[in-house]
Length: 593
Image (cartoon, rainbow, N blue to C red; front, side):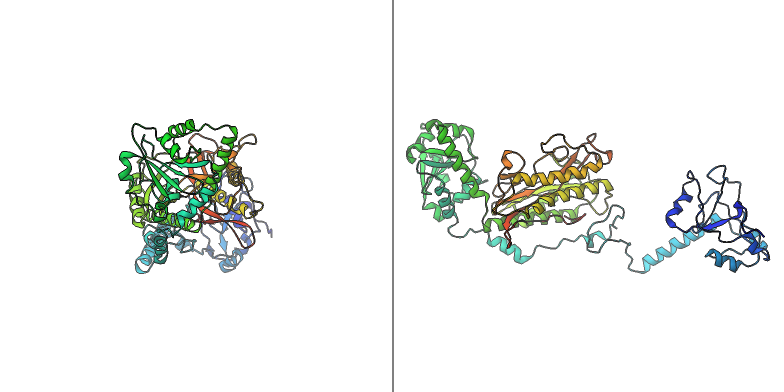
């Protein structure tokens, strides 16, 4: 008796689940997998009839499927049922050989069989009702492969909105830390005299340093800072000589009001007030009082004031060179922060990040940029921050003035915010999504590229020492190369030549931060970045990817913008290596804020 039944009556077990896809793509030629499970001779003595299976309106069973060696087409005609061998003697033996139960319907039961579609519908309804009963009667939570501490969700598995409040609660700032930040607000005795002495030591006897009301004045004399005194067309100047003594030049009619400024007592002892009348030149009055010195002008001095001072004391090439040397030395004083300044910056950034997190917890799909900004300002005010501001953008390139756009299901939300604490500024950017968002995988990949680019410079910095420091331009290069290599996967062509690649990462890596939101040093390639990275330098690292619609690369990443920004300070570790101490962050994983 032949052991090879005709092809139309042969069934085979699917031995490899990966190969199962062959049965679900009718345009692919069927292939034979495994060995015959059973043959018609095995059932010759049986009085039962096996079930006929019609594959015209259903996929093959999970474990077995028919194989046609020379089909006329790769789909089974609706009119052609697939016969199973007729009489079978031992259904148990057949089931054992097949590895699954086999239907053993008699002729009578076969005639009264329930239609397959009706049976399927019944099973689905029964399963749905059972699941509903389980949900109602137990503390059911949707399955998620993510750890319970993870506040957000993979794009493929949206979180339940009912679970979101518990997952996304934002803990309060530690009371002890908040108290420490408040204690920092009062500068210790000697703060300003030490700074004035440092400034005076950089000046020779024939030079005087001049600035206007602003952050430089606040740094050296503790007054006339941002928001304290408004500039006008009438010069109001602060000058410091080589002994660290201070001269405050004021319009006479403003003198009484100016003297109301509460300067530290240590500064008052060093300060001399000089008033000028409307009929006088303020530049001549100041020059005569100081003995006609040469000038070193702060970068905040406006052009018409610089012109008026330099006309009185023209500088030759050597004098200009010396003035530039002194100016750079003076700028370096503010660049390298002391311990109190660092902690004030940390407080400002921690408070700002806390406000962003609290804002995100109150956001929902459909909220507008303006509504989000209002919530953010409420949260920043609650922390005690001053002079706060923010950029809020949804589903757009993250450089712009913002609109009243609503947050869509597939949109990132970007918040770039900062406020002052003790005069020192925070600067943080987060690009994030909400629990009900459905972010495309390509956008998530770009977000991960930006995150890697933010980490690359600080990882590189660990290889350097104070004796052999990195240059700021090198840090920019590390981040930019990370973005370039990552975005090549999405079809973004690299910029030709040796110049820095600004194809999608369109700005510098970062900037210094302190009393000003943007100050030196600057983390950029070019002349401004050819400076060593030193301990005490505080700056931001804020890589980004920006691709307008119709721009370069795959369509899946066009119209997308992502930026992540955190600030920190450079320090030397116990092994003599340079490290970067982040004030906040950086983001650790997808979903972090």
